[in-house]
Each structure stands twice: as structure tokens, then as C-alpha cells.
Image (tube, rainbow, N blue to C red):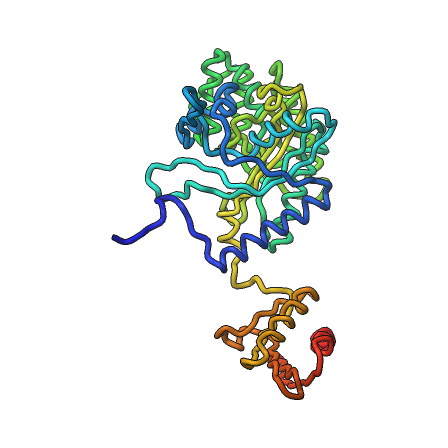
Length: 407
């Protein structure tokens, strides 16, 4: 019987792990420079963390991996985390509730069931959460941060699509839908049904007029959105619409292009304000937004919050492993039987100095910039610079390091 990996899972090759670590390292470096701190949360969480407060839509809850975790005669139903933000919100409530501001980031895996197994069920994310700041500046900071990461990774022509959960909710209220109908339509939108809004376009009400205008704004910028505010008089729409306009204005004045797509919100179940999604060449690689209601729903204080996630699985397909090269010149150390111990010591010394150095176990010298032959007789070390086709000699490990530094 042929042994196979589980359906819907993915092995990462050495070349793919180079891309993974490059993305993770670039993300981590940018977050630290913006003042964020790294956290890790458990793979297992209690199911009620995601169900008791309606933080996930029914469509999402139907795709979680859950099972009963027995403890004596009783047990709690647990899940493999289907989301990265909710566990970090739980972490904040447990460990950092006394903080006025928390800027946190993480790299984690999430698990979502997909019945055909053709899509990956385990997905990797890099995420950042900004808890305690409710300003427009905080929302835009997150968008600028994530665009900075993508720029460092060499990705160009990133399309930023913007929606606003507050605007959608105001429209649904204005349409006269009862709370149950509002929840149903909102869940449809957030489960990716872009036609849900279009199907309920009523004729001549103010809400219907606003809805038609917003749906027609797909791909447009803030000037068109500002005109909407002058054309529609709908109670409850002005505050979120004003916030939406301010965010777009700040982004555009900072030199960032963005497009309105009010019906795009898939995967943002608990969001209350701006929602943004990122597309290079039509491939969705991440998104985020404001979720001011989440921490209170989980039992914490009334704390504003926003965040985003980048999807490593998609990014790895865009950041080509073949283009990722080590910054340090690689060194292959070849020894004679009597010089093996000295060869191993030289490798350790080179590692301490920041070089990538390997002892020859059958590797191809063509993969290395330098080869160092360790001999039992003078000259003790013979270095070959394969880039310049030059051969040099050294008597001590310190001399070898000096030659490499100069080279």
C-alpha cells in the first residue's frame, strides 16, 4: 500500500521553506520596526470561543475541525483553530487586559474543512492585531504596514479593495430588514456571496438608492463615495460613511491607490468598520479591517481593535524560491581522514562569523562560492574562490576567515 499524506494537506519542500522563511522573516522584521510584539497561541481552542458570541458565520462553523476532549467523566468540545485573530483577542483578554495599547503579531496555521480535499485544509498566516486604538490612523497604519511587507518581498501592482461593515449594516437597517434577515444577508455577504446585496435592491427608498449607488461604485475611489453622502439622506449611514471616506482620503494622500468594492467581505465575520483585501494580479493574498465588537463579545472590556492576515500559502506561489539567494557566500569544507576534526572546528568558527559552511558529505562544489581543503601538511588550508577562479593558501582558521572577509 502506497503511503500518502492526508487529503487537503501540503508538504513544504526545502525550496518552498526558503520562500516561507523569507516571507515570515520579512513580515517579522517589518512588524518589529512598527513596534509590534510577537505572540503564539495554542492550536487547540474551546469551540465556544467561536460559537457563543456569533464570531463566525454558520458557513464557517460548518467547516471547523471539532471533537470532544474528554477529562474524566466530562469534556469540552475543542477545535483546531479556524481563525488567527480570535485566539489573539482571547490572549489579550487573559494576559494584557490592563494595557491601554497592544500591538501584536504572529505566524500560525489555521484549519478549515474542505470536503473535496482539493483545497488545502491547513493554511498558514502571518497576522498583526492593533488593540486599543480606534482611530482612522490606526486603520491606515495596518494597511501601510502590510503593503510595506509586500513591497519588500518584491510584489508589485498590489490592488487594495475596500469595503466597510458599518456601511453595510446601516444599509441593511435602512432597508427595513428585521434583525434575523439582516444577520442572514450579512452572513451571505461575508461567506462570499457578492450577489446577496444585489438581490435585495429595492426600488425607490433612500436605502435602496444608496445600495444601488454603492454597488455601482466598484473600482472607484473616494471622490465618488463623497458624492454619495450628498445624494442620500439615510439615518445611521453618515457616521460609517464619513469614516470610510476619511480612511480612503488618508490612504490616497499618502500615495496609496485603493478601490471600493462594498460587496467584498468574505472571511470577515466579526468586522465592524473598514475591510480591506489585497490582490496582486488577481490573487487574494490577505486582508483585514476593524473589529471593535470582538473583544467585548468575548467577555473583555469595550476595546477597539483592528488587524490583518497575509496568506502564506498564496504568497509562496508568488515569491519564487529560485530567486531567493543566501546573502552569505557558501563555503564547502573538504577534509582528509586525519583532518576531519579540524574541518568540523573550522565549520563552527565560520558559522560564528556569519558564514554558511558545510563539511563535504558528497555535495557538489558547484553549489558553493568557496571550497576550503583542510590538509595535514602545509599549507594547512587551500581556499578556492570559484567565482574568480582563484586559489589562496592559509595556515590557520583565523587566516581563512580573513581571506573570506576580504573576498
